[in-house]
Length: 591
Image 1: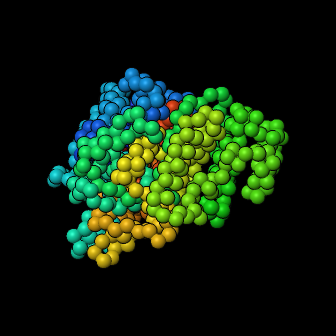
Image 2: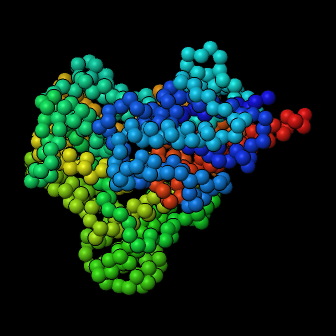
Image 3: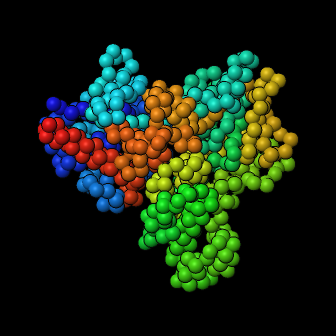
């Protein structure tokens, strides 16, 4: 009579669901007993990304005080709040520290153990260190979850897919580049989690083209420099100095923007927070969802996002730095709210904010090198170093605290947009570029490697061609310049997609009728995470949460006291699961 729940994925998302099951079970579960089967080849808690078997040189991208796995009273959810320590409280660290990923893995393991200990005595957790291959079973009946290396499936009353980042089959461009590399004896490393990539073919002293300037590039940079025996020394006139080991390649990096992600902000918030949401809240989201013809992100959603972020920016500027404004906040706020188009808003800001450096220009932030041209490759190296230095200075200057207010606005916006489902890939990249960039010390190391000649910047709109037996990179930022190399690294995670997933589990789900969005994400009910079929019907026994779904959130973890949409999702799914199990038990007893 014991009921069976299978959770595929035992990393942060699976652990978070388990914590919510433990929190809600006393209220909702009255069954005779429940077996929870966690299926993951990696240890529960950390999962693949936060496992212990990775380089200690790889850091988290968040400060220790900004990472929690526990809910608080800012989370809009039906379940009970169960507070717990942030990473820095648990580890006894300075909250401003950027810990290594192995420490975060240990924190996650502890959270997992706490969640298991908090379950009722008639609920037992079993870990299966295997890959899940497929899920079968009728819509109205028990499910079967087939595991690699196991002749019989796990029987399940319900299945939750809590998959993290998944590998995908190469798209047409990547396939062509890989085939060219095989034919000509070149090295092509496709999109991947950098800690899993075999970097040994990248030979010392040789040029390596790198496409991607985000967090995957930072990991690559570290593993190919410090990871090969080099070191950074302090005390140089321009910051850290890199002392090479002689085993490093020379990295030529470029991307669509041609610049690295913005530095993490290096000061604390003071004073009152902006009253968010203001222009993009639950009412606006409900109105968008209610549109008979649906909505278009650029036409209908982006103007609300832009208005919300501008409000966060100017609220902070006017209230914390009033000497840099030429209008009373109450007057500005009234006119800002009444402005009906971007041109009207720009005209208001031009009058009220004298210094252009104090104005928020999201388009300029998104495309800092648009129209910028350099006479030579060396001139561009100097120019981009100056750009990074200016970014570091600004992001560590409390006098520019409107940037931190925009960060809070981005978090608020993300918490609302996740309710809209699939809104395309652009927003997620834009958010990461502005709000989820590298720690300041990593950018300073980047500058040191540039000065040492081991890191060379290619520019914006970087193109890669395969011809004449080599890979060749160029950019309009430096007209006439190109660089050849026998190695190309795609420094980014694979795009989450159901149809091209390398994991057979997602492919089989798609073949079985699960719906996907135009961008290839798994369609789910935004209310509780049930998987939708192509007719829009939610599957009564299958749920999915995480980056492979259309309700993906900003990251694996939540900053304390920011509402945490991932917490809200975990709680809703946990409550739906427990209610289903209790309801199905009641039906059995009636029979």
